[in-house]
Length: 308
Length: 270
Image (cartoon, rainbow over all chains, first blue to last red):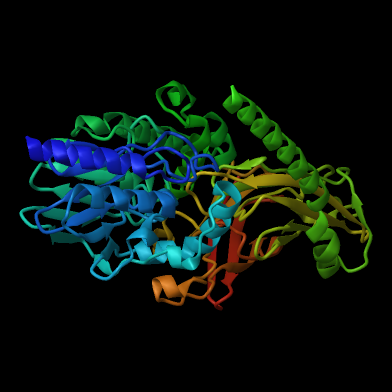
C-alpha cells in the first residue's frame, strides 16, 4: 500500500513538474496493471495543441518499459519520458510506433539513446520517408514546430508479420497489419492483462480516418474482433474500452461508407458527387466529421472503383 | 484580472497577425506565377485573365491532398472554326508546378476535362486555355491543402503497383449516343510516386515513377492527348468527351517516365 502511495506521489509530482509545450500536464491513467495511457483530444493538430492529440502511453515489465507511440511533438515525448522515469526504475527498452502519422511519432527523438529499440511495421520506414518532406513543412506551418530530419527516427526493429517482446514477466505480441487505417499499422497485445493496444486501428468518438484501405481495414477488424481481449486502447477516444464492443461504431461507419460508395460507382457517378452526398446522416455520431468524412469518401472511392 | 487583460491583448495580437498574414497572402499568391512560371511556360505571350473561354472548379479545401478532384468546363462547343487546342494546368506552389497539358481537336465535341491532382501546399491552381486563334486565357482557384494527418502520397501504393497498367473506360450509361458529345472516364492504375527523397530514413532509393503521356483515340482518330506530371494522383483518372459516329473501339495509350508503355482498348456501341 505504502509503495503504491509512494508511486502515486512520485507520479503526481512528476506529472505536475512536466509541462509540455502547450502548457498542460501530461496526465496518465493506469487502465490495467502496468498499462498507462495518456488521453488525447479530439481536435485537428494545430498551433495550440502542437499536434499532441493522440492517445499515447507505455507498458511496464519487470525488466523494462515499452513505450507505445511517442507523442505528437518532441516536447510531449520528453514529458512522457520524464513521467516514465518518475514512475519506475526499470529502463525503457522499446519505443513502438504504431504507424507513421505525426501525432504518434513526433516524440521519438526524446527517447533516442543506447539500449532503446524503435519498433515498427515493415512498411513504416518507407511511409515515414515518403511523407517526411511534406510533414516537416506542415509542422512548421500548422503546428509551429521546428522539426528536423533527425526527429524522424526509422525503426531499428522491424515487425514483418508478428513479433514478441519480453519486458520481463510480461509478453507483448506485436502484429503488422495489412493496409487499414494506414499501410503500416501495428497492434500490441499485452498477454498479462489481455489488453489490445490498437492505436489508430480503433477510433472512438473521433471519426475514423481512412489513409490506407477501407476494405482492408474492415478485413483487419474482422480478425481483431475475434481476439479475446478484455480491453482495447484506441488511438483517439477514451483511454480504454471493452473489447470487441469498442469497435461497433467504427465498423458501422466503415461498412456504411463501403456500401454507399459501391452504389455510386455502380451508377457511374463521380467522386465529386459521392463526396457531396454519401453518408451525411452519420454527422451527429462523430466528432471532426466535417474535417475527415469527405476525405474518407475520396480515398475509399479511389480504392473501390478498382474492385471489379 | 491581469490575466484577462493579457488574454485580451494576446487575442487582439493574434487577430492582427491574421490580417497581416491575409494581406501578405493576397499579394504573394501570384508571385511565383508572375516572377517565374508564366515566363517558363508561356514566354512573353499575352494571357487574358478571363472566364469567357473556360471555367475551373476546384475545392477551396483539399480534403485529401493526394486526391483533389478538379474540373474544367469549356464555355463553347468545339467547332472546326472555333475550338480549344490546349488546356494547361499549373499548381504554383507544388514542387513541380506543371501538372498537365491536355490537347483537344474540333472533334472532341466539348473541351471539358476533369482529373484528380495532388496539392502539396496552400496554392493557386491555374488553367490556361489556348484557342485555335492562338489566344491564351486563364482562370485560377485557390486551394488549401487540408489539415489532419494526410499527405499527398496515396493510400495504398502496393495495390496500385500490383495492378499497374490496368485501365478502364467508363461511359455515363451502358451505350454511346452517336453524333453528340458523350462523356467518358478513363481510369489508369499507376502508383504515380514522387520518389523517396529522404532515403536516409528508409535506406532505399526509389526514383520518381509517374504517368507522363496519355493518348485516347476512337476508331483510330485522336480524341484527347496529354502530357502529365507528378501532380497526377495515384491511379490517374480523366473525364472528357468524344463524339462517336457509330460503334467502335476506344483506345488508351499511356507511357510513364521510366519508359513503360501500356495500352487498352474497349468496344462501345449505341
